[in-house]
Amino acid sequence: MNSELLLKVIQREERADRIKAFLVFLVAAFHLARVTPYFSA
Image (cartoon, rainbow, N blue to C red; front, side):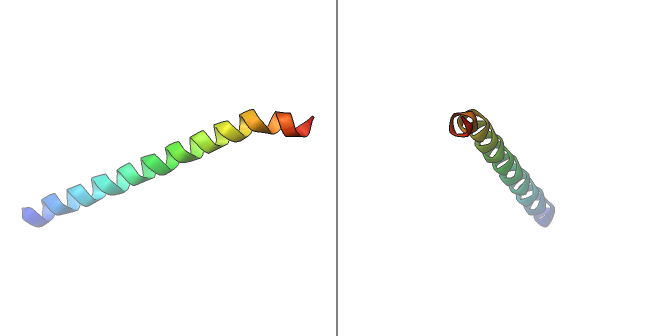
């Protein structure tokens, strides 16, 4: 029982890390999409 709970907590943390990485990627992509047109002119 205790090890199952620990495993669930670890899986949730991994999922949260993936979501954070995805959000960082989205913000970076959005930032590049906004900044790039000024440099290409």
